[in-house]
Length: 257
Image (tube, rainbow, N blue to C red; front, side):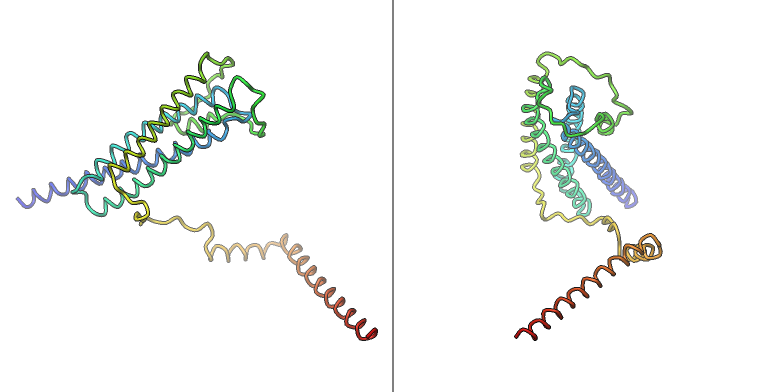
């Protein structure tokens, strides 16, 4: 009997570990989609703004919303589980903070696209900002949607009532996302300032050892020596000039006083 009980406990632990892994995968996917949506949102109103960009924004937004719904139900059910071990609860809380922060960024970008779309209409090309960007955004959208390619033939004609329908849909989506954020805070009480990540930290871009090795490499390269020597020579000449000026002024004061 004890063996059976231990096995049941182990199965429950394994199931919760799998839930934690699934939660991490879902949150990582949402973070990538939100980042791609932010990159696409920066193109609204620019010279690369077109019907295809707006459609890619819509598809990316819809995928982010689907992921958000799945993550909310997944994390909520586990964080409200009283039998969740303390270590796994801390991990779930970290995922919850990352999830809620991603939703807030998505909400900000959706509001930005909504307002920019009102200012820069697709029917008025002369209002576009010539920001110098070139090329399309299909690769970014394809990465967000996890599809091989999105190089669809661009439509030259704007569908009737497209912008008004898109604006009403976006307004509804923004309201739903705002309600979701408020509802999450009511159902799960996770204090963000109390959650501390305890995983492996990202290494510094350059440690002290790397910096010393880079400096030694730079010193060994002959191409960098003339510039360094010129700087030393310039500083030396500047000091000599200052000394000469001070000596000249002192001599003048002595003779004319």
